Picture 1 (tube, rainbow, N blue to C red):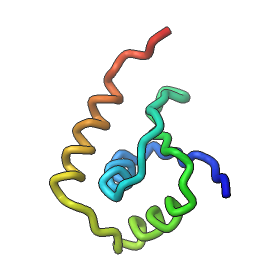
Picture 2 (cartoon, rainbow, N blue to C red):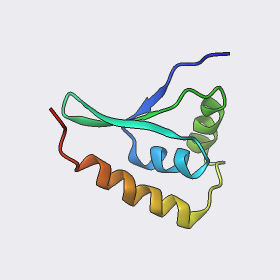
Picture 3 (tube, helix red, strand yellow):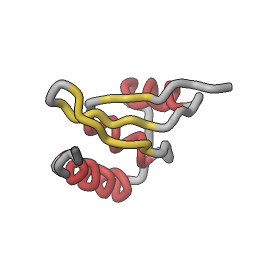
Picture 4 (cartoon, helix red, strand yellow):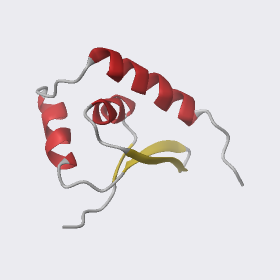
Length: 80
């Protein structure tokens, strides 16, 4: 089963998805905003739903580490 990549501008959600084990495909800029694009995964919708319902549990240290890495990725200049 093939699914589409999942993309979000929500830094906190992106950090939670990484801490939950979903691989980040890349970070891109669209319309002046940073988008976190995750590899296709049929389980990602359930993880996103648990995050917004307040029921997603992840390792706190991993979550913080991923947030710092994502913030850094937003500040990397785009390659032309």
